[in-house]
Image (cartoon, rainbow over all chains, first blue to last red; front, side, top):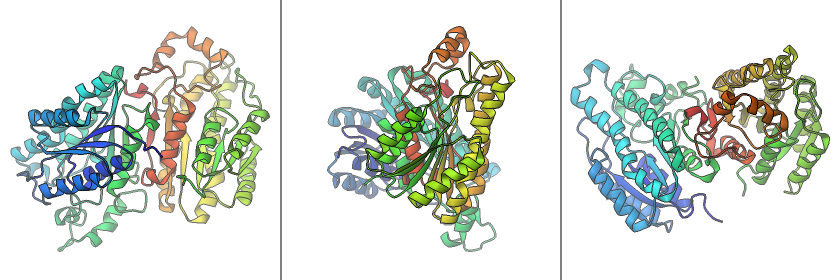
Length: 277
Length: 271
């Protein structure tokens, strides 16, 4: 049986682990080849969970290749538009085309608004907002060459709702919606569709760390995944504390496949009812 | 193996157009179907509505896929008739997992200038949706296996388009109203793992849109025709595009998607 994105090539940022790796594997399962980038290294103001590593990126390569799909992986920083462009151009040179873009790379940190340093603000905006634009800018010429394509920008429930203690993250994730809406209008004539997904908490290291558990459970002296789960769950309409990376991948797969050939300019929550609650 | 193997879907307005497409698409993925349709005319609606023969054709096409279908003529304005259709369908097919509140009318242009047109479209497109969900939910809660409900709204459910006749105003009000219903049900039914979402199609290539009455209406009011022009370079989308979005929402691929308004609109709402 032919896959849902057979013969397509997808460019994915933040592909070393978690959601990004899940997207790479899910799309490869459905027949896509992958151009993967990841910083695979630390960011100064992000302290509450460990950064992805070059070994993580190598593991994504291994998993995609195990599915008999091709992958061109590069260590690249979404803040550096030149490096990003070089990575996409090289990937397209090797894999032949570009159809799908997943601007997934992002970081998360918790800080009360008035305690946030200027540098931490700038770093977040540079990665989670400017990095998304850099990704789109590097990829769009190739999509135009392909005669169309689909882009999905990973926002957050914090891209639709104000969430305390994450002013920089929330501002950036709202900004991503603005990028999506503008690009959807500007590039529709090229049959390029652009949408955002808005996950609630996803079961990855980005939320599964003591500082995030503590935010949900401020009274708890030794925060844990188990103790935080019911508090996470209370924020969702469905009785689940968080969702899995594959749930975001499945939503993205739908959006980039021909099943959604007329869906563009849409903000799609995958949030267990967080934003409706 | 299909994405909906062993599931049963209740679909209103299933005789033709989007409703028939949903029945077929879900059956292709393994679902059995409980189908209802009014199959007669409503006075304030100037275009031809579905017929018993149309409903029979849906039955034939689902059965050709080796799926079971229990079809009956029922009016979504009649709660007792919907209760009976669900009871009958569940008795024959064993369960209920998916609800598609799809039935609707579009009294625009000719015949839509009377207060009755307002009343009819509110009764069918808003109260009919409430009746549909109410008729189905007790069975789903009792089963305890969760479920998925998709209400068919419209781009006119998120934007003030539809014209200035009582029928058109009622259409836009009803399609906005079902978003309120969806959001309330998403919150109250979440504890039962029943998910509730809306889809918002632009113009779809079906008899409700492609007919002489609608063509005349759009020709006479260019502002509406302009409001209905898509962002992507496509005039009209197909029923299967809505079916595919609904399939995503009701399948396990959308297991944590609830409370969402999903446009399938070639970008109209983003313009």
